[in-house]
Image (cartoon, rainbow, N blue to C red; front, side, top):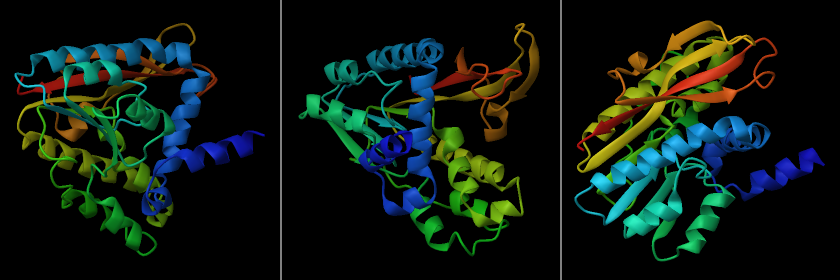
Length: 269
């Protein structure tokens, strides 16, 4: 029954074939399944993300349009509230789930879902993934150009918890990773830096929400390990920060809780 349920859910994810080939639909479903298992642990993080998005929305001098990149199933996006502030809400992701489409149907004149590759690299990457060398793969992300946001420039662009995954997930799907275990991380860094450059060239206000650090916390609450992530992507210290109980014991490990420190960077506001 579980297999059939996942098959049905995968079928309902709107995702281009070449993006499925690179693991994006599978990652979308993995996030949805984890949320179902640890819903209570995720709730404070999701609420913090929503409240910050609404706060920054109120700073915009104009409210014609907002674009949310990495909208997914909108777990962390206050779609109804944004639709009450902006004339147009664009939910953009390479894998658009059923929940996002349901929300778009609730606000047919104000909310739209768009399949969009924020890296600009995936269609070309999928064509050559079987013969691509580990040395050449990161350059696909470094030199890619996603173009303007879907629908054109906006008063507010929100990059929602996706920057660290833009190159990481497809990097794991490359056969070259079997011989070079560090390849997904190099793809992640290249894609993240390119995304930051892209955000920096947009007009209006921009809100970036991303992983700032990764922590392993023991059952007794003691910190066992901490990896700072934002510096790898060339980011300064975040303007805001909060914790996300991503994977409580035994979700990731029976020995520790996996916790992320989430950072928020605000540009132009």
